[in-house]
Length: 417
Ligand SMILES: NC(=O)C1=CN([C@@H]2O[C@H](COP(=O)(O)OP(=O)(O)OC[C@H]3O[C@@H](n4cnc5c(N)ncnc54)[C@H](OP(=O)(O)O)[C@@H]3O)[C@@H](O)[C@H]2O)C=CC1
Ligand SMILES: CC(=O)N[C@@H](CCC(=O)OP(=O)(O)O)C(=O)O
Image (cartoon, rainbow, N blue to C red; front, side, top):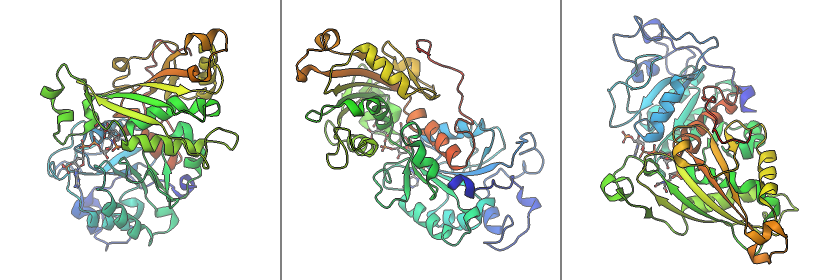
């Protein structure tokens, strides 16, 4: 178990107080100093003086810090009782101070894959957790360098890697755990590799919406998901999907078939199916998914149609969902339809708006073709759809409280709980 392998890292020692031991030694080495990202001058006078974690801080290296998800991660780590930023990498912002971070004065650096490997070779005194918040198809050289370096390290010095892209979500090597804790908590906790692939934003909401109904699906028809995302989902690289002029008074459909999340939803839900379910490894579940981007900045609204092989009333559905998510602190079940605006900047997902065709609910005598459940899911694409989920996964991997550092106080007012 990864958690058991990690005993916690040393607190940040200012370079001025460290030795110049060679790379690979246990002390804070020349390599760490060369890439040290704290603002010169503040070190030793003010930095780190006000932050006194009760336990040794766990050091995070964030690659892709300029992006929307990177910014949210910085805020979350700033409020986290045990994580602290060790390296914050962006090519464009190198040398500039990291905003929204109060635990220390720290500057962005531009770490190459090779430098990330060299820091990894330092062991946990340099970095406990690497976060890759990079576009798809960019992380592989970084991950390869980390893996090469980690291969030379003892178990208690192994770093955890959390990747936010889609690159490892279909992993067949068994190296990467799929980081959707509410559905895959046991495999995450049992993972010994310390490699976690964070799910996609739409894919997170869609799976949370469909998973409780897996035993009741009709094997002859496919669930479908209509998704609307805020334009932060399209990242910071300019495109029509994040162009405010093009988005004004507009709703842009894109990738109507074969979106990567369409494949991710089916692939990951199939893994949850038990032998007695209508779908499973012999009959993989496929889900139809059509995304849209809207003029609001952050948030996702999904409407799901889920074909059922038996009639279910709204009351049945509410019961099924409440039982399934009982005790979960980042998934709330409500009766009425959740609103994307209410879920913006919140760390949880909300499932609700349950409906069934009239005959199905009242008499149970509906034709098979009418038996379906309709529901809504909302979440913040940058939070439960990305950064908050990454923190949840890091907490699990490090063996600390799964919700550490995640604000949980603001529950939806319409929750049934
Ligand atoms: N936005 C969202 O809602 C969600 C995003 N994700 C996924 O998370 C990842 C990050 O997304 P997001 O924050 O939106 O992306 P952004 O486009 O906003 O940011 C990308 C980051 O990667 C850096 N970067 C870009 N290209 C390279 C490169 N070739 N080499 C090194 N660094 C590079 C950029 O900084 P710089 O150019 O300064 O180096 C920037 O910090 C993506 O894989 C995305 O699919 C997942 C769920 C939700
Ligand atoms: C509005 C918008 O463009 N959204 C992104 C989803 C962001 C995300 O979760 O992407 P990854 O699966 O690549 O990590 C998209 O559809 O590609």
